[in-house]
Structures are given as C-alpha cells and as structure tokens.
Image (cartoon, rainbow, N blue to C red; front, side, top):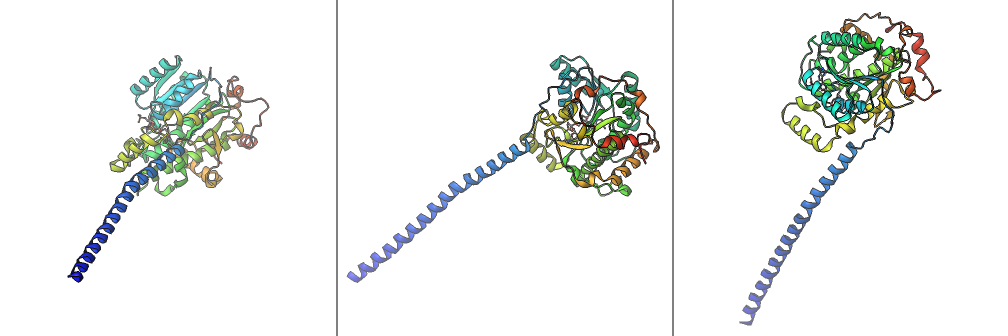
Length: 387
Ligand SMILES: NC(=O)c1ccc[n+]([C@@H]2O[C@H](COP(=O)([O-])OP(=O)(O)OC[C@H]3O[C@@H](n4cnc5c(N)ncnc54)[C@H](OP(=O)(O)O)[C@@H]3O)[C@@H](O)[C@H]2O)c1
C-alpha cells in the first residue's frame, strides 16, 4: 500500500515538475517575444531616424550677397529645386526668368514668388528642353530682350520611362544634358557680356554610375536609373569642358549635387517601386528649400573663381570621379553634342569686345583674387570651341 502511494506521489511530482518546466519555457518565450519585437521595432526606427538625419544633413548658404541688377535664368523653375532657388534669388534682388515648358504653371509660380518677396522682376518664359526649336526660339527671345545674363541655372530634369524628345533623342539625355548644352551655347554671347558669368549645372551623385556609349545613344536596353545616370555624367563632362573652353572669358561653370530632395522628379517612375520611392522620399528626403542651398551658394558666393569647373555639395567643393575630367572624354562629348544640336563644330567666339557689364559678378568677388589655373589656358584657346 505504502509502495503504491509512493509511486503515485512520484508520478504526481514528475507531472508537477514537467508542468513547471513547460510553464517557465512558455513564460520565457512570451517575455522574449514581448521584448524582442519592440526592441527590433525600435532598432529599425532608430536606424531610419539616423539615416534620415544623414540624408537631410544640409549646409545653408551663408553668403548675404545680393543680386540687384543681375539677371538669372532658371530652367524648370516651376517646381522643386528650381522654384525654391528662384525664390531665394528673387529675395536677393535678382531679375529671375523661370524658363519652363508649361507657361501657365510657371506664371503662377512667378506670381507667388513676387507676392512672397516683393520683387516684381520675376518672369515666366516658355522653354521646352526636349525641342531644339523651342530652345532656339527661347534663346532668340532672351537675346532680344535682355542686355546681359549673369547666371544660367541648368536645372530642369526628367527621370522616367523611355521616351524620346521631339528631335528623337532619348529623353533623359536630350532634356537633362543636350537641351542645356544647346541652350548654353546659344546664350554664350549674352553670358560673355558679364564675363565671367556663372553657369550652374544641377547634376546628381548618380553620375558615378553613368556610361556614355556613342553607338547606343538611344539606349536599347533602357533602364530608368541607367539613363538618368548617363545624362548626369554628361552634365559633369559639360561642366568641366565649359570651364576649359570658356573660363574666364565667358563663364565660371559649376556642377551642383543637391542631395536627395523631395520633389516631383520621381513622378514618372512607374509601378510599386515608384510608389514606395515616393513614399520614402516624403519622409526621408530634404525639402526643396534645403536642397537648393548649394545652387544658391554657387550663384551668389564670393571667391568661387578658383573652383570653376568643379563639383559642389553642401556648399563646398567635393572631389569628382577622376574619369569625369578626362580631357579626351570631355572633348568627344562636346564635339558630338555640337553635331547633335546642329551647331557648327568650328564655331568661333570673340568675347572681349562684347564685354559691357562692368557691374557683373566681378563686384561679387573679393578683389585681388586668383584667376585660377584655367584662365591662361582658356585664353590661348579662346577662338575655337573644339580643337
Ligand atoms: N530631387 C532630387 O533628389 C534630386 C537629386 C539630384 C539631382 N536632382 C536634379 O535636380 C534638378 C531639378 O529636379 P527636381 O528634383 O526639382 O524635380 P522636379 O520638381 O520634377 O523639377 C524638374 C523640372 O524640370 C522641368 N522639366 C522637365 N522636362 C522639361 C522639359 N522638356 N523642358 C523644360 N523643363 C522641363 C519640370 O517641368 P514640368 O513641371 O513641366 O514637368 C520641372 O519644372 C534635376 O536636374 C534633377 O535631376 C534632383
């Protein structure tokens, strides 16, 4: 009897302990789930927060220079970075011309800027960078109306599915680069009147992935990012070569990398990835007002002559990929581009006798400043755009 009782007790104990074990195991599992999930969630949030801080790290333009009496053209000035830069430069007293393909939109933005800044000298003008004819008409109109041009901001941009310009070029290459190249060439004489004026090419860090294959300009295996990166690389070569050829008799040229900015640029990116990117941009990217600071810096800051032909980010010069400044690559693109635009590859320009804008940017520069090492080289080549 006693033996039987002992067995029952023993079985009972065993049951009790295995129950306890299960209970503890369960509790540990619950506790770790209770802590692990929030910990993981917090780590993701912290990661996103730090990443956002990194993306949005931004340096304000500290120059207080005004632009009274100066004329500025901003392509794509009706939205995003162009609009924000237009506002900043109008606030500093410049005459601002927003060169946009939809005149109605541009007019509305011009009126908003006038209202906000009190500067009445803000205008909208029609320019479709996807049409060489439109560019030519715009340039003719500007040359008829303006006595000089101090700053040209080549800002407009396209990113999206494969499309062609009116003249049959792949749209990213045609609008972001070739259109601006043609426009700048057509406005060169006007820019030369206040030499050295400033051209600012709004590029992007994606240029490092760009590749220009001259036997595949239409880009048979099209990819949005690839096409965009190629156009930005072309803008970089353009900046470097414009400096080599035109500094200081015509322009100082700057490339600006604005960082990641929440604008309409990705509006044409299709599908789910497009939706996700736009959502991500809304929370994570800089505002256009933050993003335009380096453009404004290159437009107004003193002592930039020695940095002509260079790349800027966060209001300071940064190193560009070595291949960008490769003279052969830059010249080849320039020469091809002259042909694609139907410009004379032996185009000559004489600038000194046009110089009339004595109150040009020279007044913004510190006196006695170095002319930069490109000056004598450019002068010796002054009569020929291509060699
Ligand atoms: N946002 C970024 O994160 C970022 C980063 C690096 C570089 N960028 C560069 O910054 C520049 C400005 O872009 P955003 O970010 O401000 O984008 P956005 O808000 O989309 O502005 C682009 C502007 O370009 C204009 N445009 C497009 N095609 C044109 C054409 N054929 N002719 C004339 N204008 C045309 C657009 O006019 P519509 O409104 O009529 O289309 C718009 O005003 C672009 O060059 C872009 O590549 C942007």
